[in-house]
Length: 250
Image (tube, rainbow, N blue to C red):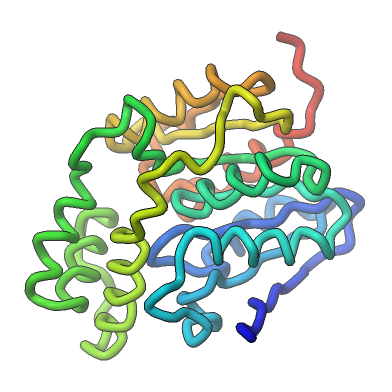
């Protein structure tokens, strides 16, 4: 039996938000956002294969496992807003489509949706990781860090980079991610898709047009932000979490 991931809570506010991190990340990167949500209960967890949940992953870990973990965590909470970043947004949307009764709304920041027409056949970061992986997992992790951050990451050991790269390659090569994980047109959960104005073009276009496909979908962008908006623009990200449950006039 595979052990479930552990989740943490902070605050005791009447509204609850659950953050789902992306690839090459962990729940701690949302701490800055939590500071801007003092009236909320903020929940996070490290996905299988990352952070304190690294040892829970296996070579066969796939999207379905992340979906099951998220469903388990959400089931312990009082209909939270689920805010996902990148791969975490894909997991959040997939869960919302299957279990709309469990959540109040989704905030989806630049989810990777390869089956939609706005996603290129060969996306730049996927190609970068694929090329670098021939030199080993550590090289793949280092290459993606450089591309996302725009500069080399803080010094890490080869062992740490190799562990990150192994998890990275596993997620990027999971064949189930390329298959439709949900049908946007049938979703009943309110969804706020978000993109950064400095993000890659296909990230922005996919987030924008996804909102048009979801009946209760809306889109916002964070001006001046790139793909790491939850780190660089925490106050803006927190405002979007609050906006997700605000009445919408049109």
